[in-house]
Image 1 (cartoon, rainbow, N blue to C red):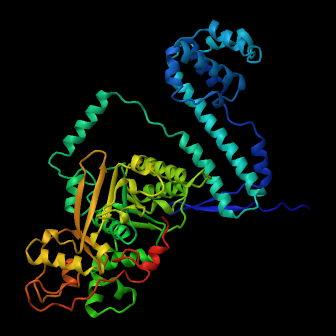
Image 2 (image 1 turned 90 degrees about the horizontal axis):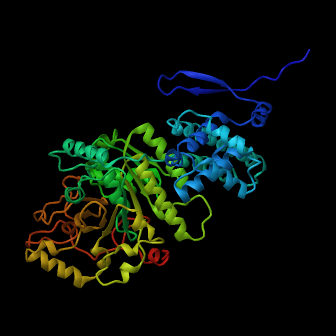
Length: 549
């Protein structure tokens, strides 16, 4: 009596109803039989496409938008005939059986494709060319399935034979599948008539609205951009320690608190660090006291209030280090389908990889930049992508950054719809007593708009569909937060250092009273950022010397 080997089963959970569905896994022998089967094909549809093209040459223009080349045909003879038809049409804008017969004969493939009689048979295969596009779609779909089968076969062989680690095998498999998926992404041609109607409908729907995009929570920034626009790639660039991540987190919080889902991809910091910084910014607590667990009773109350406010905010964080472009797009697609995203943030571009070998780092960053832009358009959400600037700004008088300072690739500024650069002049004058005295003099003379202490400038150097300009923000160093700029200073003798909504102007919190009254605390020399805290105040000499150019 023989016993059969039990067949393995897997379980799947239905996300909608929670029901468990059991599926049997195929055995290796069954998988081998599947790979030996004849791949999916549609010979009749292939004949229909070629017959329609011979019957009505005007149909060729529609067919070539669907089919890539003769490689999409299962039967090699059909592929050779298709390539010859397209080449003739491209040269002469017309085609008939006589011309096609001559081209195939000149290539010495006429007999191998079936001869003149087969060409006549193809021309009589369909009564009308009206369904040419439909036939072409069938042929293309079968071709994609065959490509998928071929890719899975290659993946199977690689999995058995590859000696590298599992992650590299998995990335190779994802790349193969992703390339096939990308081939199906084609947009339809639309007439100007339809586009104008759609544009007018959008304008009517937005009538009376000052913001037509996703609100950032910063009034001056919203005014210049009218909100973050769907499908746009927005670059937020700066030198280290200027506050890129802090501003990105503030934007994330502001957008999420207005009901928009936000996907945050952090390649630099862990999720717990990000959450800690968000809580510090929201509550107004000194981030250093929070990190050292030296909170006062008032701090705990503010922290609990911030936790309650952010608890249900639709923010979704992925802190996978060394994320590749393909992994980013796959994760973003799943996240968008599951959580209905309104914005995506990537921190930061230069830490990503393309997932494939590139001739140079510049070419790799260019590929990443194009991929991020394509993802923004595909998911139809604004994508804020943080980027590093090179050292050129630090060597320039005034230290103001330019688009040409973007590191490692000139294509970033070309691909981006908006290029913004964060600049804090105070960063370069931490221990400059003369500069601080000058700022104090401006404040005492009532020219507070010239006082750059605690002031950040977001330079909008490029905006494809809007004006450029500079947005002023107030930088609260203690809690690493930005807020709308104000030149007003709190009254002397009042400590506003706790609470996000009552946070002091940073320059006041580090300076003596402006009207001669008692100061909240004694002024001291400016210092660099706290240890291991990227977006603090000034530069750390040791860290700066180790930064790549």
